Image 1 (cartoon, rainbow, N blue to C red):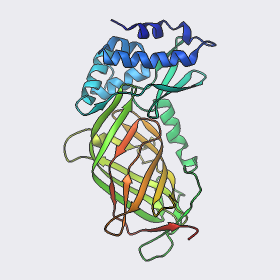
Image 2 (cartoon, rainbow, N blue to C red):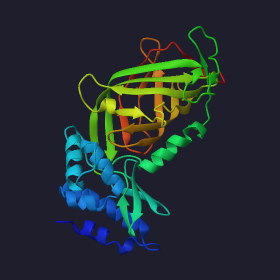
Image 3 (cartoon, helix red, strand yellow):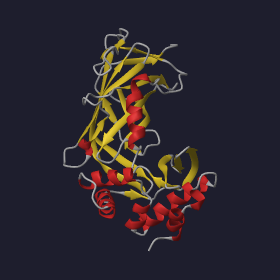
Image 4 (tube, one colour):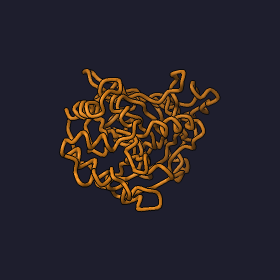
Amino acid sequence: MRSALVAAAIAGPASACGEDTDGAAREVVAGLQQAFAGKDLEAICAEMTPLAKRQAGLMAHGRLEACERDVGEALDLLGQGAWTEPGTSDAVAVDDNRATVTLTGDVDVALRRQDSAWRIDSFFGTPEPLAARYRRELPTLESPGPEEAAVAAFDGRGQPCPVVDTRDYFDITGGCTLEATSMDLRVDLETVFGTFEFGRCELRLEARIGPDGRTWMTRFKFGAATLNGCADIYTCRNPRFKTVSWPGRLESDGDGGYVLYTRACFDSCVGYYTGDLELRLEPSSAGGMRIVNAGRVGTSGLAFEGELDIESDIQLRAADE
């Protein structure tokens, strides 16, 4: 049986233009969460756009079939790890026929107006059309970050890092190369249905760093020693399957550490994830540096927990030192 909340959201006069769009969007999210708790797959499917249904099918078995079966299999795949309850609606932003409901915990749920009612437009993560636009615009985006504490970067000999050559956006060269690895990084998916532990992954990243601390992330590659979905999370690619690099910058935290602020764009078997990512660097006991918090991809719902060892011999200092 569909819950009263779900039925009300489907009926949808409150979703009509000019009426209480914020309240209607919140009702859809609450209805989805109640349907998930009650294992009501029919009610969940009733609140999904065709795009979200397609995503669930691709995740479940590589193709769109029957929505209830697709959603059930997709959720079963994720239900094998740890799970925590979802946040509640904290804020709503409406832009024409799209709405974003931000849950407590700072996770966004994307909705789109369909037949005068709000529907969830992405089973998980960033809706495909918005992710495609973000991927196209990456070369023109400014580096994120507060721009308050610039960093100067040097190679292992103490020489300023060379300038990064970005003339070929898909083959960036120059600069100093920062390489870091983790053999046990936890990857979580934060969704309208709660947070699912996706897997324990290996990660290898590479970034080009210029003398002024500006960065380009050229590699962010997942893998795993055991068979799981980690290798199916990969950085966005252009139509010719070339990796799309991410602009970023390093800044000092004023306490001996640094923060790498970078744009981020992922494709995966469990959706698209775009936004800003913060990697915190601190001195290690061995005398080098390490990444102590791998962070979250904006509010898209992809989160990392764990540390990475920095293998490169790179020296950083606040630019005003």
